[in-house]
Image (cartoon, rainbow, N blue to C red):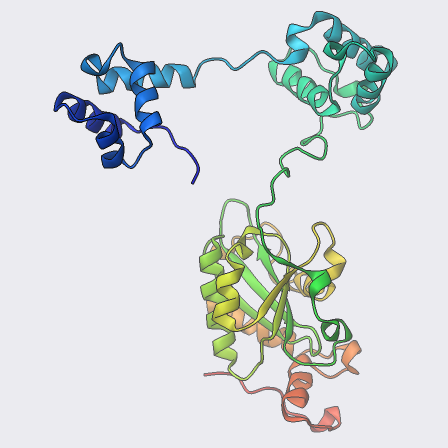
Length: 344
């Protein structure tokens, strides 16, 4: 369990219990905290247990929290800052080149070492302060939104997932019905509504569901309801990206009785079928449209329209016809096939 600071309510309880003469161990048990946490709280925010006051302790804690952090290395080392500034402005070296050159020139002086991530932070900070601009001296002529391999992607947002490399080989061969690719179609950024898009890999059959927000639980409920509406379509695997709507993928696996596999980040070709369908859907839901205003019956109509259009990959059968053939083992000519009936 991660540590969290004492709240004002906990500090008030602590003050009352101290006034009643409770021991630190008993107070810790009552608050669900360690004895060392209670002892440190009293030491830092009062001159003793008898003088502990909750609101004064809260003010002191808030003051320490907003206290300026330690000075960045490039701010407190003028020689290093001058070297980096000169290399950026006159030599037009990249931050990685500067970091590497510093270690080569000052091999025995670690105080002159700095990582390229720190140099990027220095550049971004100066631009925000409006003091100096090194943007024109960088390769792209602009300040990057993120820097280095650490950046904002330092931590995986979704963990303990199964990679696409672990997906059964039969899914790649498209010889079996029931393997799906999934994604979410977004509209305007001002609205959190979207459309959950599911495409069956063999038949190309599309299942759509409106989602009112970007929460994983909402996505799971909408997906389950959409597949239940289709009824007879099997769901064995889903291949998804790393969007946070798939954050509760383990619950989705339990709800559908399927395995969820994640494509590699920035590899859209590993989910090429759903990406293609997203492009088709943009004809009806262009970028920037407010999907919260789109009624479910319109989404159902668009789903039927896509599922009843001929597909070259299927020999100009429709996805509905191809799915029907697979479900019932039919070997009929396209002219004699009926599309899947519309669900009431």
